Image 1 (tube, rainbow, N blue to C red):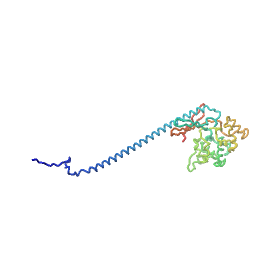
Image 2 (cartoon, rainbow, N blue to C red; image 1 turned 180 degrees about the vertical axis):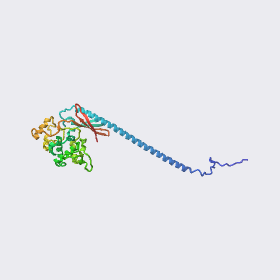
Image 3 (cartoon, rainbow, N blue to C red; image 1 turned 90 degrees about the vertical axis):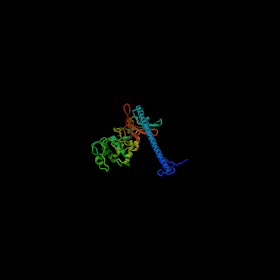
Image 4 (tube, one colour; image 1 turned 30 degrees about the vertical axis):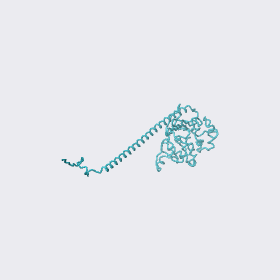
Amino acid sequence: MCVCMNYPNFNLRGVPYNVPDKRVPNNMAALNKARGAVLILALLIVALVAGLGIKFAGDYQLGLARAEGRWHGAQARAYGYSAEGFVITNLSKDSTDYDSLDELWAEPIPMELEGGGLLISLTDANSQFNLNNLVDPLVPGKPSGDPTHYSASQRMFIRLLQTFPELVQDQSKAVEILESIVDWTDSDNTPADNGAEDSYYLSLADPYQPANVPFRSVEELRMVRGITPELMQALRPYITVFPKKQLLNINTMQPILYRCINVSTDLTPLPEAQAAALMPKDKSYKQKGDFDSAVSRVFGSGVVADADFDIKTNLFWLTTRVEIGDQRRTARSLLERGQPLFTVARREEVY
């Protein structure tokens, strides 16, 4: 006799397979939720990695560009220093008898470089009027407007101001500006007859004090009483600033400066026709005596020109323009004539 017993089929939880376990959630819903969370997490990781990759690539490119810029900048400076040596060597071989614009130094020199180019050019720094030629004290015991009250350079500047009649109405205004310039640079606080000292500048809406020292830059002239923006713009091509007094090179100065030459008893600018007669006929004066002959033809025999000038140059501006890759650098060096070599008196970047 066979006895058959039916035992229920239980799972590990002790629940029969055919009895639903209310504690177990829907397996498919839970699986879908888990897949969604994993997908979102994967997308976030991909986005984070992509963002970091872009940032690292950008930082690398920026660092590379900076390194390249520094390298090209160092190359440009090296070429500039080499240009100084090249020019100094050649200028030292130039005749010291006279300097003029028909000499080789006045011609720009282009040079090809690997990945770029270099342009070397020289200009005569003594072709412009040095404002610090005006710092001499006025001659005492003379009235304002008397030509003997001023030095030769001061008389020349008074004449230069009058070559802009639309900006400087008359000679008295030119004298006022010149005396204000002298007051700006002298060390005392006593104004000249038509000058200006602390009492004037401190009474302005935006007060300031005069420098009471020689000019350190051309832009400083804008601070002096009587120098309007328009007059400053008109004067700028003809003026410069050097610490020491410098003579004008009559072979290289611009035509308007010939109008500043006259006899010492006359503060008016020279008429254009007479100024043209003083210009060199053969591109340059080789000797000072040649200029004296021109003065005699214009003013009469025995007359001495009232001008601080020379026929040679003491200072040259060297300009170097370097292009390497994407870098473009322009620099200027002031070269001063010495015995026997030139020296670099100043360096500056041009932007």
